[in-house]
Each structure stands twice: as structure tokens, then as C-alpha cells.
Image (cartoon, rainbow, N blue to C red; front, side, top):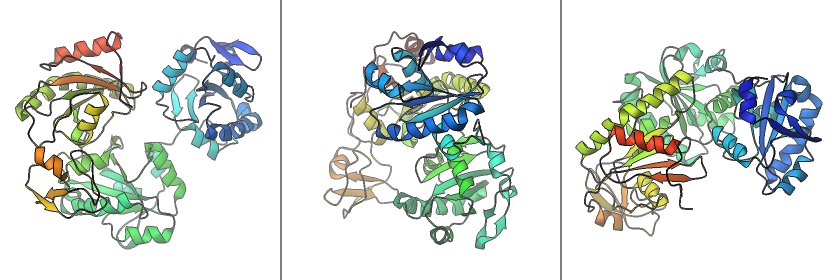
Length: 473
């Protein structure tokens, strides 16, 4: 076992017979599974006996050790639950280490299994799925295949069901489109994507590969026949699951954009393309400073600095982005050099009211702002179910509806339409939101946003000298 793994887990672990030295009990292990679980969690109580059986019958002999990281509510519950387990555990009293590991590996729900190699490097954060699909450890230690390995031998379908190989997307920018006919948001988004693709994006150099979550091949065929791009052969369910796992796809519709060299451009390709359907920024490489109006970005993944400047003039907003960009770029460069999935910090600006920006203001107890005027005139329309106001989120058949007269997907309720654009200019404000740390946020004074001010704020955050606030529940 490497010293880095010992440093990560501390000097002492707990076994069924008492405390033990981490270095001694992990010596010679090829992989370590951190098992985040709790006795009060019904899915955990269902999974733990299975996991224990697989460990005892096969996985321990393969070279796997498991360390229970408890989310139990007290030490008595921990002891009772751990007494049913045949592996090791973090000492329950070391709550700080457990929380640190949860944050480091972005554990947002339990049961969750994170598998590390002997050097402490992540093999997979979806160890539960890997182990459940291979309980005898035939593919131990379950290192995920690379995209190139997954696509090797894949069959893609083209126009009229023409069979193609993976070479059809070699040296191209392409997007995996995870979708299904049974999914209403997918059925609403697919025609838009097809229009954008046919009008502009295909000519820009984008190829799309439909990866189906349909429930049977007949539904797949019915859905795919109206798509102007490629598809992964429906019968290749294992390859579909490998792609979903590789990119962490948890909901549909979802788009993952891949660059010509096989690297991931964006796992939030839906927001990137929706915000630029003509492909002016193709292939949509992430900007050092993202705009909240284009989607949540990395808000839920890493501590994120947000500059709220919705009421400022465009020139002032650009100056703020320009001031933040060198600092943000530094963290992006460090991320790329280290091969990490996410940067240490995210950086965003809120330039328009409504949507995510308004929700963030509410969560951080900032003054609410009326929505900005839409760029086109709005027309009063008959209300119906299934629409939402882009200002406040209200919607439905009993809410007055005003829709863009030029065809944009933009609606205001009567109240937001009446007060849109009525807010006087405010001083810009920097905030840090840290959702992974149990919903914390930190605020800086209002005023000019400069690179120096941003650097000082981050230094104070890392030194833990900022006042911690809790997001509104």
C-alpha cells in the first residue's frame, strides 16, 4: 500500500476485533473500496448483505479490501451495523475524515462505493454498479474502459439502417445523444436538435450518435427513423451501459460532446448547443468563466465563484468576465495538467435575471430582482399545462402567459411581464457557493470586481477565514 493511501485514510482503522494499523491491514491489497452506507438507509440494508456475501466468497481473495464509511446518526447505530460486516471501517469518531472523503469523491447518496487502486487513485466512483454486475470479480479491479476501448468493434447505424463502424466518427467532433421515445422532455428536444443539426451544426462539422434508452427495439426504430444522424445499434445494450457509466449519465435527454482527439469537451452538451444552436462557438469548449444563463455548469460539483452583475451594462459585465478569466484559466490549466475531472474552483457570472440566477439569489438570501426584458416583444397567449415562466418559474393553465413573438422558447407570466426591466443598476457582488460542502456559501463586499479582489477572496476561503453561511432550505 502506498503512503498516499495511508495519508488519505489515516493511521487507524477498525476491524471486528478492534483498532488496527492502516498500513498493516491494507498491505498487499490491490484495491480498496470505500463503502458509504448507513443502517437507517433501506437501500443500504438491502445491498450490504449481498456485498458482504460477494466479498467473503470471491472479492477478498481477489485482493479487494472494503472500508465502511458510516453515515449513521450515532456510534451505537454504527457499531450495530458494522457488526454485520466482514471488512474494515473508519473509526466512527473521525467524522471530519468521513466528511472529507464524501466531499472529495462527490458522494451525494448512499449506498455508494468508490474504488481506489493501491496508490490511492480512483478506479471508479460507481463501484456499486461495477461490483453488482460482476460479483465474482472476473473483471477486478473494474477499471472502466476508455472511450476508444468501448467503441472498438461498435456497430453504428446510418440513414436507412446502413451499418457503419466506429471509423464513421473518427477524427470528428461528435455528440452522444442519450434519449428515449418514452421520455417527454426527449420528444420535445429531439425535433429542435434535428433542426439545428440539419440547418447549421452538421455543416460546422458535428456528428451525432443516438444512444437509446428505449425499452424495446421497436420503440428505438420508430424514434430513430426521424433522426438525421447516426445511432448505436440498439442490440448492443452492454456498450450503451458502458457509455452511460463512463460519462455519468443519470438522466435524459443528455448530450456529451467529444473532441476530435477523443477527449470530452462537455458533459452538458445540451446546454451548450441550446445556447448556441447555430454553432458560432462550435465545438463549445468550456469557457473559463461561464454564464449562469447557459446552465448550472459545475455548480453542484465544486466550490464556485459567482459574480452577480445582472443589472450592470454589457460593457461592465464584460469587464468583470475579463478580470475573472486569468484566475479561472489558471485553475483550468492545473486541472488539465493533473488529469482531474473538475477544476478546484468553478467561475461563473450572472448577467441576466430569472432562471438559475434568481434561484441562487433566493438560496443565498440576496435581494430578488425583477426579470430583464426579453430581446423581442412578447404576445399574450392562451395558457396551457406544461409551460413555465422564465422569470419566476410559475406556469400552468391558470397563469397568464406572454410568449416571444419571434418564436424563441421564452415565456413570462403576467406579473413578470409587467415588471420586466424595472430594476435600477446595483453594485456587482462576488459570492462563493459550495454545494458539495452541505450547501455552504460565502459572501464578499459589493463593489468593483478585479483579479486581485478575486484572488484575495479565494485565499480567504482556503484559509477558512470567511464566515460560513447555510443555503436556504
